[in-house]
Amino acid sequence: MVMLASQTFSLEHSASFVGRELGVSEWVTIDQERIDRFAACTGDNQWLHVDVERARRESPYGAPVAHGYLSLSLIAPTALEVFIRPARIEQAFNYGLERVRFVAPVKAGARVRNRIALLSVEERGPKHLLLRTDNKIEIEAEDKPAVLAVALVLVARGSTNRA
Image (cartoon, rainbow, N blue to C red):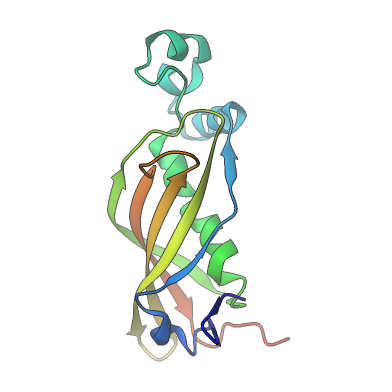
């Protein structure tokens, strides 16, 4: 579980974590194979992403780059890693995104990770909480992040696994 001071993050104590970093995910390598698979799934096969030789010759980055939406898609699995699974939350739903910015390109072969902070906790009826998280997809050895986004995660109260 995520430890902060002497308290462990949980839905019951989530309000006390507002304004604090929940954690940082492990590094994830965005290799060309992953970029190619994303292109195949989405139909976005621009040469800047999938034509390695042309990207080396003509791209301002000197290499193929990941799709912005590929970088953005890392928010969900890294949230699972950083706070959803450690807090044993069984029901978490992507509710939306706010203020998404694609700040810097992720070159094929780069490693990225997500730095997550809790911005707010909002009651959504008797059975749900809406967690608003700040997400910063960092690129290893780069000053600028790849993505900045606020993610909305709807969680069901009582959805933690007590077993």
